[in-house]
Image 1 (cartoon, helix red, strand yellow):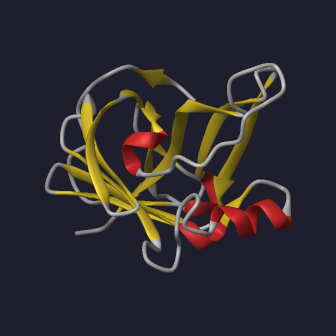
Image 2: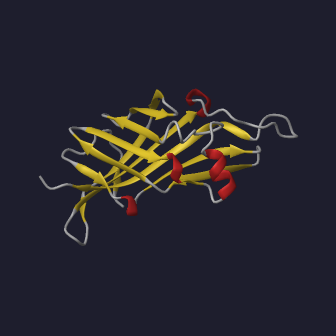
Length: 170
């Protein structure tokens, strides 16, 4: 993908192609490694110069069914009360992230590809958004002490949304 780093949202109306996109997160684990996961169900769009997106909490996937279940509880995302994580931005430098009903401004870095036409004649653009947030600020504070001191889970979570946007016909 030919990318340029810019801080402007593509003009026009675009929708996320979930087949060619992903939303993922990483957090330090046990002081020895990085734990990662993602969301199987998410969507997004660009309209009127605003990029919005949402991930379905029930679709979180960390490759362990028992842990997927624990992530649904109030210890983490509380999916019954807060079924979605949402994001909104108009400038690709700062956005608003909502987790567990808590909305906070977040600094983001972004890269936007040059527009391209896919084999089916649809105009596409790639947008990669990255942010690091303190999960405690969103009420996602469960942790457990480890034997070496400290906790098993880090506080900072890196979030990456790698999006393929398809231009919608007027």
